[in-house]
Length: 228
Image (cartoon, rainbow, N blue to C red; front, side):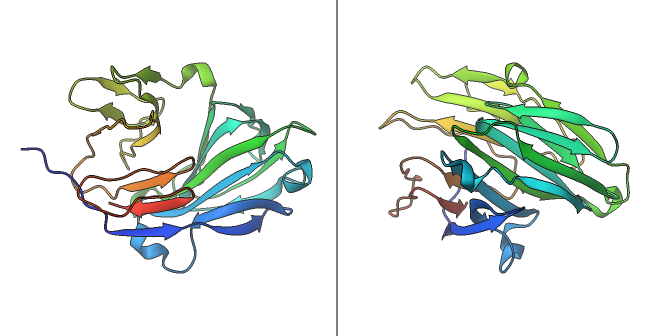
């Protein structure tokens, strides 16, 4: 029997800056982050003003978790101490496992135009925290996209999308954490019911427009995230 999840809480993203002064929205992270476990942080960056992003994210360390960067628009170059170099561009994904430690930089490959995307931090299980660091650079053409019969576009970044009629594997599969990362583009008035594995923490972030979740009388607005 299908069970629908309820909205547990709704949180609004807050203006912030990071790196060398990149302006962004900190959706969650820091105080109260334990309620989002195993997710540690989500940032949305987006501006057509170069001064908001041009300084980028110079070399800095990470350890014990994974960072997932999904680019909606723009170009950013990754370099790390292991010698990896990658170009993240519109529709592409960078999946970096910091594990025992990595030093990397993320710098804009453009001097004008719009830069927009997201970075999600995902905690690693204790058994994986001291494993070797790794990096995946996934080009846009290798990130599966599909359109449902009702006209909903689904970008399947990680895990498996399944709505009971269509099943599609994502660009990334991580057996240790089994993440499900989907980007939905819903026409007005449409609805979708993706299958979420039992026991998984589920987050729903709105970056354009607003949505309603069945059984909830409170819409989730732009730059708000819901725990469901």
